[in-house]
Amino acid sequence: MLLKILDPLPDEVLGDLYFEMHEAKQEVYVVTGINRQAWPDGEGGIRFGFNQELRSRFASDDAFKQAYLQAVKHYQQVRQQIDKMLDEKRVPDASLVDQEKDLREKMEGFIAIRKLKLGDVVTVPCYTPHSLQHGVRTVEFQTPVYERKILSFAQKVLTQNHWDTEQALQNVNLDLPQEPDRIVLDKTASLCRERVVQFDDFKVERVSLDNNAGFVSPHGHHRLILVVTGTVTVEGRELGVEQAQLLPACAAIEINCVSQSAIVLIAEAL
Image 1 (cartoon, helix red, strand yellow):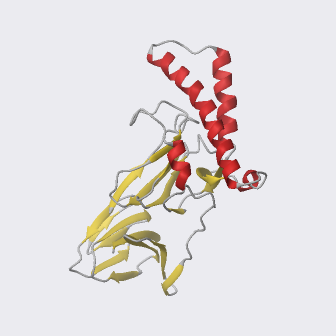
Image 2 (image 1 turned 135 degrees about the vertical axis):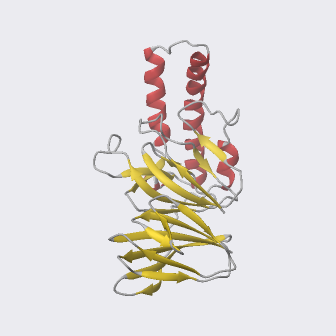
């Protein structure tokens, strides 16, 4: 398992990440911050799959894919013109900037937006395109696999010299994935343990704790614990928000809440 923080800039477009799809990598996002400059109401978003209402207007899914592909290609042509001018330290003229905005909005009209608030957990299955939006800070659990197919991007792509739209559309899942059922593993007056993710390679529990509540994470596999809110102790060592610790497979680990309340996530390798 790999654990990292995504902290995109709060600026619209500039802070939006690649609209990309994975064929092998499995990801879980946990929202730990919403920039109020970008999202005054505290509700951000992630581009997540495709616009189902627009999809229903087409005679077939193939027709929908082709229309989306054409929208991407038209946008990419203008994007490349602008990127070339910026590389040459030239300022794009106003008409080209307006054209870029118009084509970008048409392209992104094919894409669905999922609203996000603090503490939300997003499971990203393979073959679902996604793009975290600007100003939404998350912690990400993922399998340690580097592979992606970039469908589009509103800036110059720096990690490769091409987009992968046509290849991605061959296997893309056009349906909006359903969030997995939350399975309650243990519930008392001061504690709630839920299974929130079950992937092939790892699973994730969300544990909500009141002050002085505690539990023991059993041995068996190695685990990563991450604090989402509050403060906990892990075998006496204090951890705060966005701090994480590796829990060894060979030992059961005692975890206690030492703040008014806390939420922790525990990802366990399978």
